[in-house]
Image 1 (cartoon, rainbow, N blue to C red):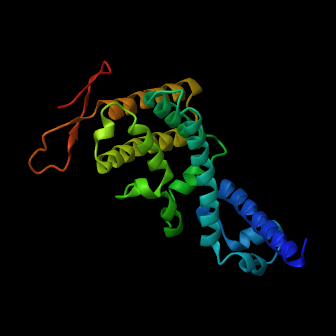
Image 2: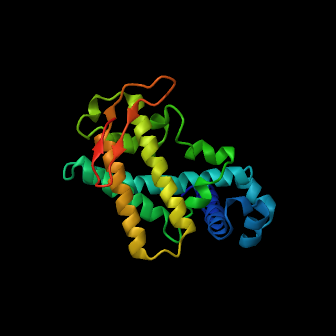
Image 3: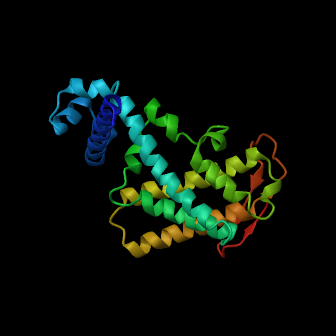
Length: 234
């Protein structure tokens, strides 16, 4: 190994140590409480050493987010690709949503700290409600790829597909937040809520019917879900 290669290896090792330490602090206190000083103190290094490898806190947070978010989405997409020829679109959406909710509500998950942060560096990776999100966000892209496999959805415009994916993602986000806050819920109730959420999202994915736009309204679709579980377009 050359001197340059050894030095590069040492730099990567230090960057990894800094990110690992920062990740531990985020898990304990949250992103807003993270600081270069706290990272340096935990590592027993000077703050100047940290700045030698990262420009500041935002750069570290961005790296942590990229790493954590990528691992989460990669896990979901890996399962989707594995089951691509074995499961129906309904099964893929059900499994993906269930896994997403369970992983992000796990006790050690940093998802809440990340997704509720409104700093530009974080939003640069977590914002999913803008037009074109399906081209920029793996989570929305993954949902769109599943939705296209539902009967009748392959004829939808890309804009309509993206909007449906965004609504499904947002609904899952809401349930994740409540399960995270109400963490003392019995496991049976948690699983019942997840199952019911998945059922509702399957109705949205497979039961959308085009409506006649109402005057002064922006909505293009209507969906009535009766108590019995059936869905009708209005």
